[in-house]
Image 1 (cartoon, rainbow, N blue to C red):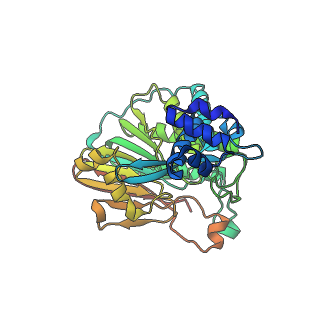
Image 2 (spheres, rainbow, N blue to C red):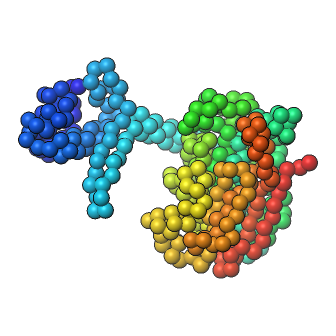
Image 3 (spheres, one colour):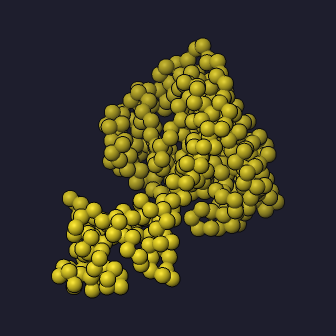
Length: 383
């Protein structure tokens, strides 16, 4: 290893430990013995320097390891008031996320800005309607004879707008509408149709660039249609396990397209848990891939960024997806009603062959700012 780590030492003690570490063939035990210190003491300081170097030097993974080795990441042990924890940094992922954010912002700047849409004259300021589409899996390909129903890009687009029209027509004229894209809006997340984390091969319709184009077009059309119904609109695009990257660029694109429309508010939270306070009603959202439903009330109540919102609310409703079937905990366990939404999408081959069956549907739920849920409209695919 070269001596570049010395450039990231901030104290004389760190410099001493790193010099000993380098001089003794990257052996922490030997470095600690030479310095007359404990192995854990020296190791913690060396890990801090490595973590600092990884954050500040994008090329560390090619220059920060012994010859013949690849540095995948670094782990830093940090002492806290309540104990201690390990912070693991994957150098490649950090660099990828930073590059993605920069690229997406540049792309979004080039998108045409949407024209303003005339607001409806009459609306009830106490009401908010939540339009939820979860696990829509745009780009998924299903063969009806195998899966029960056909599904491709054309069917998905037609089904979406038919369902949205049913939901809008049946809902009251509230002042606020919320478009909730509850994760897994796209079926895959890269040029290759595989799941982001496990790399499982997926049944895909068309190419990724066509999927991106349709994804953007469909969300824009949904926003414009809802704006004709409600005076204000909040857009929530949740991260899912199939669209970790796509959810990022889709949020950025919607912010850019509707930047000059004051009636549209795009939630740009880079955190897989989202929330909004409507009067005394807290609406919270998570795809369902990180935490199970029963754990979500405690999470939203304790999460620092939502703690005050939880305290100010009279009722809390938490919305999830992920499992493609409906499930509702009406017991208000933990101080919240947690609801898992069904999907409008057809089953893919994996679900069909595994025997998974669920009602295909999407729901629009209207909330009064003081009284909670008042109206519910369910849309199902056309026969």
